[in-house]
Length: 262
Length: 314
Image: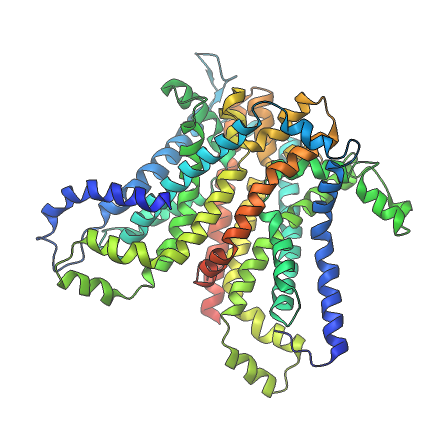
C-alpha cells in the first residue's frame, strides 16, 4: 500500500516490519527455549512417556469435531432461512440469536452445572459440546447470513421455476456456494472449541475425559512444578494448532476477503 | 469434510417432511421458520434457559448445595453495589478495553498497511503475527508466567539491552500486573485485527489509490484520508468485539495471576468464578453474572447505534 521507490526506503521498511514483529516472536522463542532448558530433549521424552497423554488429544479432537459438525449444519440451515426464505418477524428471531453473542461463558456455569448433573450429562462430551456450539452459532450465523444474502436472488428463482423445492435450493446452491465463508466459520469454531478452557475445567472432572487445555495443569501435578517439562508439554500441545492453521491459512483468508466482516 | 456428509444425510431424512408443503408455497418464497428452528432451539433454548435460571438463583443466598436456599430478593445486587472489589473489576475492565483496543487497532492497521506494501517474506511475518490467535491462553499462560517471573526472560532481556534498572517482579506486584495482562492480550489478539484489516484493505479499489497518488497524496495522507475511512466497518466490528471481549475476560488473568495480587487483575469473569466456584457464594456469583450480561448487552447496543448514526452522518 505504501509506495516506496528508493532502495534505502525499501530496506528501512523491511527493518521496521522486522522490529515490530519481534515482540510477537519473543514469547514463542521463550517457550521453546524454556522447554529445552535443564535436561534438553529429555524433557520431551519425559512428557511423552506420561501414560494417557494421547487421551487429552483424542478428547479435544472429539469435542472440536462435534462442535464443528453441529455449528456447520445449524448455521447453514439458519443462514438460508434468514437470507433467502420468508419468515414473519424475521428480525426479532435474528436479534434473539445475536443477543447471545454478548454472553460470557461464566454466566452459564451454575445453571449448566446443575442441569448437566440432573440430566446425567455431567462428565460426558455433551456437557462441553452443546454449550460450546450454542455460544459459537450466533457469530457463525451472523457471518453466513450476510454472505447468503449476497447470493443473487435470480439463482434461487430459477431453481424454483424449474420445480425445485427449498431443499434443492439448499443442496445445489447454498452448500456449494458458501464454501469460502464456511472455511472462515470452520476456523473460528475450531479455535473456539480447541482452546476453550473453562467448560472442560468445570464439566469434565475425570482425568480420562480432560482436554489439552488442561494439560499444563495436569503436568503441574505430575512433575511437581518442574517448569521445563510444563513448557515442553505446552509446545507439544501448540504444535497441532499451528499445523492446522498453516494448512487452512489460505482458505481462511479467502473466506475473510469474501466479505466475512464488513 | 465430515461436516458436509453429515449435513447431507440429515437433509435426506428431512426432505420427506417438506414435500407436502411444496405445492402451496411455489409462487411465494418458501417458509423459512423450519430452517432457523435448529439454531433457535440450540441457542435460544440453551442460553435463555440458563439466563433465566441464573436470574432466579441471583435472588437466593445459596451455597450451591443447600436444598432450601434462603430467598433474599435483590439483596445480592444491593451488596454488589457496595462491594469495593466489584467496582475495581469495572475499573479494570474499562481501562483494559481502552488500552487493548487502541493498541490493537493501531498495530493491526500498521501491520496490514506495511504488509500490503512490497515487503519480502510477507507470509512469514503474517504467520508469526497470527500464531498467537490460534494458541490457547491455557497453553501460553505458563510461558508468560515464566517470562515475567523475577528471574524470567523479560528481565534478562532488559539487563542485556542496558535497562537492568527496570527489572522487577512484573506479575508479583500490584502496579505492573494489570499492564502485563493487557500486553499478553494484545500479543494474542493483534493477529485477528491485522487479518481483518488486511482483508478489508485488499478490497479498496486500486483505482482510488492511484487517483489519490495522482493528486499528489503521500503515504501518510493516503493512510489517513483513504484507507482509514474505508476500513471503518472493520474498526467498528472490532470495537464491539473488544468491548464484549473485555467484559468476558477470564482465561488470561485467571491463569497468569489468578486475579491477584490483592485483586489487582480481578475482572468480572474471574470474580464470578472466585465467588461461585472457589467460595461457593453461588447466589452472589449469579447476581454478578446478570450484571455482566446487562453491561455486555448495553455496550453492544450503544456501539451499534452510535456506529449507525455516524455512517448516516457521513
